[in-house]
Length: 285
Image (cartoon, rainbow, N blue to C red; front, side, top):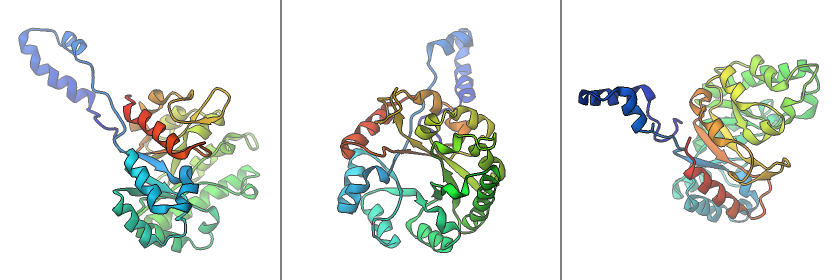
């Protein structure tokens, strides 16, 4: 997604050039008119944040999510509902679900069914969000995972969708002198495997989002937006220490199209997602 209200800087300056007929130097004109700011057009929510509520009241929770202002959601399980019912519920509440998380194990067994279900709901991205420990003990193990992701990505592309991987912090702990996240990026096909960067977990793992955006431009179409306080605790977006303006100013370079708010253990889920939404709605970058 291109950040809302984003206007090409060159186009803006060129437009000002027409005003130069008044003999005012262009540089003075530019200084009088601040460049347009960007905002997130559609703020999304990872429904894991409200999983307890979803399990108890599927429709009521989706209705409240939409009422707060969210327009996109990301699933991590369908809470006992069929894909067809999920799609109908999304339409009923004015929501879309461009993405969903699926278990790693399904890649080797049942991936065709995963893709059928995802296509029925209307997902654009099929995301694996966890790698079993036995798969990640060596650098070669990480490379094999990257190759497996490429294989899954081929099938996902053939089904009309995009495969992606969501990180935690363990991908930034060196294995045999290498950063596993780097191994995954290098060993997987960039056209078939994209990355959903969790901005809390990469920060927790001492990784630099901007360095990855620069080195692998366009490879991060989705992000998880979750904040961290000075002690490393997960908090509502905007109440922690992560510099969102600095990160989102590079959304174009990263290729970010979807921004999903998440909080793993909010004290009061609706209050938490409302506070995060209100902060992001006002955020300019």
